[in-house]
Amino acid sequence: MLPLTSGIVAILAYDGLCTFEFGIAVEIFGLARPEFEFPWYQHRILAADAGPLRAMGGIQVLADAGLDGLDEAHTVVIPGWRSREQAPPAALLEALRRAQQRGARLLSICSGVFVLAAAGLLDGKRATTHWRYTAELAARYPGIEVDPDVLYVDAGQIITSAGSAAGIDACLHLVSRDFGTAVANSVARRLVMAPQRGGGQLQFIPAPVAQDARNDLTPVLDWARRHLHQPITVSSLAERALMSERTFLRRFNEATGMAPKAWLQQARLALARELLETGNLPLERLAERCGYGSMEAFRLAFRKHSGLAPSAYRARFGQVSVTSSAAPA
Image 1 (cartoon, rainbow, N blue to C red):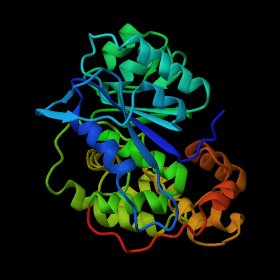
Image 2: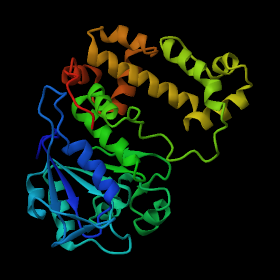
Image 3: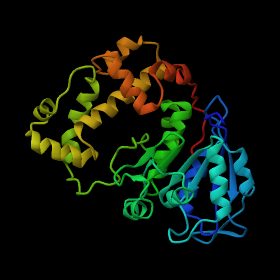
Image 4: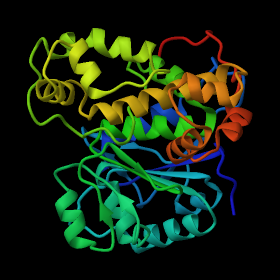
């Protein structure tokens, strides 16, 4: 079994390549990172088809190797698939099964999930894809627990993301798993985007956001972030926003795409990661600082979110060195 560390990231290329999804993977895993004082990923472009590999927009891609290169990969990225109706090559499916069996991680972006499904690697697992394709995925592969709403699903060894841009969030999530939140946020800044969104956020906000809805709530959200150590209720937030609870809940969902309880949990866990990475506050005091009433509640929430106990997370990601020497992307 391979250790689940950074290592070699194999990015699949194929005839009819989805250019944007492919570019996401190359940008995050293949770009040099001189701002970090530790080794970054090694990336390889592997051909799933015989050449030439033509991508959308008239681009041709030269691969570093063929599917045999998957035998050395720690992580495999499937950047979409050319057609949901076209079965992936048998050689590709078999190579992915071998990679999964020896412990490699698999990450699909958008329609790339159909390749993992065709390989039988998602049976009995939770997964997602672009909201336009979730019903089709569930109908064709009833053994998969398809979540139609979220940005990405981390099932441990396999990560599946929603539509194209959600692939950025999924890739940054993997960076966070490997190197910690501070490093993932640094990568996001170089991309000139906000820090990664949590996978549980909605793929899209179904109703338009009123121009002033987010501005109405900004002071309330800022206050909540400053007072995460205190008990915070929906009624207290609504009162601070000078709204009824019903109006507040509607406005909050419009502005953030999630319920207040989920947002507070995400904010508390983000603060916990930051404190674990940058300081040595005792865990009991850290849990209190983040608003958890007991260490047990904190440990359960943190492990569910990150896959690691708080002490293990600190040991792995504490005081990660990030310099400011990088040029703009």
